[in-house]
Length: 327
Length: 144
View 1 (cartoon, helix red, strand yellow):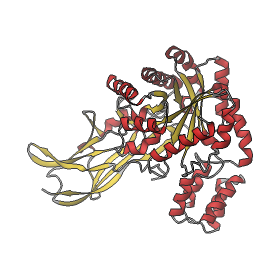
View 2 (cartoon, each protein chain N blue to C red; view 1 turned 60 degrees about the vertical axis):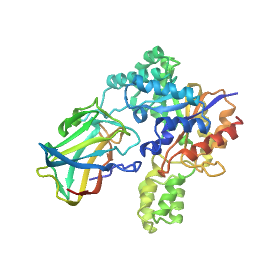
View 3 (cartoon, rainbow over the protein chains, first blue to last red; view 1 turned 180 degrees about the horizontal axis):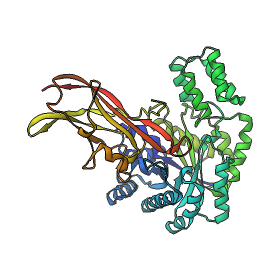
View 4 (cartoon, helix red, strand yellow; view 1 turned 45 degrees about the vertical axis):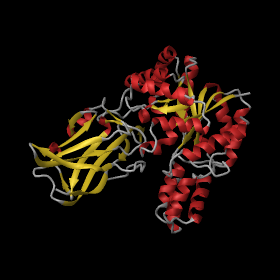
């Protein structure tokens, strides 16, 4: 039996935060209200003293832990390879930056740090002894359009196996398990005047493996509204989806790297009133995960394509997870 | 300009209520306003690739414009070297523009061109990152 814990990435409230409707305390409070037993903080989003954690911010985090009963469990790092104006950071510089992230994670008491694949496998390997010293597990985020079998994810897997470090692994983002078009993007296209039949045609071509260029040409031929191109970019980009037939294979990929997985980013873009995510098949995924020995957080992460804020959907998302997992 | 990402996450980029005249030796000789970054996270100032201010379509000279964050006022040319100065998403920066005599009474169009690199989204070989457009164009009213 798995030892699944439910958490919320405060990223889910990014819109409310950017609009000053929520301050940091309100984000933590909302996560607690949604039923999280811990949260993920994205350093570059909500830590005013980033990349460091000031004593003042640490005190706030500790005060809120007492007040709402939850604290930071996951730290979202930023691996800014392009931070210099004239060249990319090299591996040693990316490594040095990641060590600073480890310090921040450790100071906040986070046991898991999510790193972006920009870090690179060379810096990742060299990070192992530092991660062990700080006792923070570093997980490379696997994010759509990548899946666990993508070549550069496999490169990271080789490093994990080679070092044998228990502090190197993955964070799996459920976006790669999407099997239907993204609903907010679909609705947005409709509101811009794209006809549903053209969206359906685009989705069918995506399922059939038609190339982006060919799909664009065919839709133009069919007289589709130009806003279809934005939908197509999503369907072939970071909100892409695969056909339901390949779901068993994708779930196998998920399970194969489970021994190296520290945390799941349970991604969602929408939840209907009856708590269903229209593009990511949560029932199948969680039923599958329930029967494994996965021990870690499911961090609910709402990506606000509709810019409507995350409060309601995040509540529904945890409700859905609890229902399926019987928690 | 080619494709650039825009994130309509903020209520405002230029904080119109913060707009005010700037005084030099007691006389109106410019203007200033606050800006919030339009992205879900903050950026180091070195990610800023372009920052220009226009009034009614006229470009303000770069040397007359400054960018202030955390009490540190910088000339625009230094932003690209400021890889240790972090601009939090929720914090406003102050833009100051010296303009002799200030802006005339009445309505003006204030435009900020603000382009950044998204430093973790490499979109091509070498130093090629997703461009982010955090610019804004608003109407401001000068009353005196």
